[in-house]
Image (cartoon, rainbow, N blue to C red; front, side, top):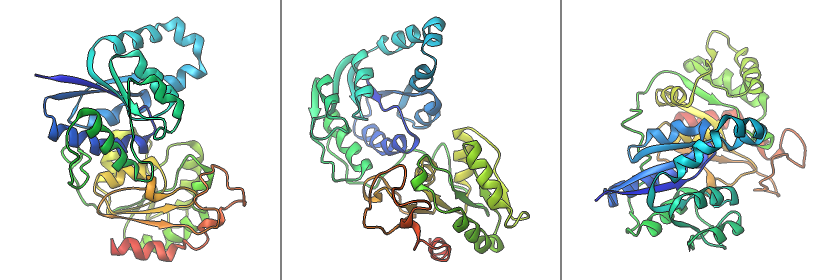
Length: 332
């Protein structure tokens, strides 16, 4: 008999990618389960990629916060309420552990399960669940989410390697182009632009280089980097997440700062050299066989600060020189 489960994890791209292996586990261990996924509208494509997801419920919290009266007048809030309440779920699992995600889980009909007081990112969220689960925080996010779904849905935790469930949708097709992912949301995560330019000089003789971007600032930086070798470096056209996934799946290799596209590239089985400064890759880094972390060095690391208190560029990147990055990418 089919049983439907609602997952609540709204953003961001890297966090959503982290949940995919747990979905693959559940699909293998409990094939009778059918998953619905509630997430931000801008990331709805990600949920639709996984074969275990039967229905996607988009929410527009970011947009509604900017234009609350418009959301009320348009009827979007009422439509969202009806979508969330349409099913009686076997379980409603908050996989984010925030107060906002717990509140959205509270709207749905079904037994609410999430992280307990000591495990949730925002402990007060645990008060809104009917069952809180203890999941150790000193583990990688992928491991924690696999444990969470296994405990919530009562199946043994698989010991298999992580499976993101994307191979069928985005088969790996090794091309000739290298990809530089230089855009990220935190200023403190940005590898110095001069390093990107030097890396471009090293890589360009070995094949074309593509530079995807997401914001106007990232596009401008990509165009400056591309000036190093205009005949070999190209700024990628703006596209949606599915187009980005197709582009990454055909890459020869990727160099990336800590960002959602970096996690997507690793999940697609692409060789990735990840550059980490203020964040801890042992907790939230890319996780896949063909990837390697390069961690910066600083007494304050990992500081988890969006703005480096020691100035720009962040000194933790000082010894992550382009020659070292290129050498490691070639080995991968």
